[in-house]
Amino acid sequence: QVQLAESGGGLVQNGGSLTLSCTASGRISSMSSVDWYRQAPGKERELVAVTTSDGGATYADSAKGRFTASIDNSKNAVYLQMNSLKPEDTAVYFCNVEVWLSPGETWNGWGRGTQVTVSS
Image (cartoon, one colour):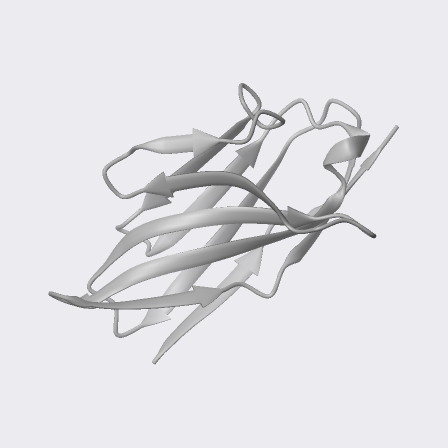
């Protein structure tokens, strides 16, 4: 019905930048919202950012001022722009996306995760 493709992770030096993306395909009317999570080894999954299609966004304290979450309805895509990355940002990052299939009908799904590694 709907598929998600997540990409953009990689290895970056301390202070560097990366942009993660999740692109949805299938029977989609419009994007609704995205939650970005991350999970570091041995730690619980952490909510990093939430954004909705109306432009509202909230961030974990650890992400404020450095990360920006956005939605591009023209591409059925969501993004997490990460700047000033630190070694403690190293984790697998997941998108949790909600889309509108039709008025009153939504779909929610998870990306497969993408590894972000920040070297010191």
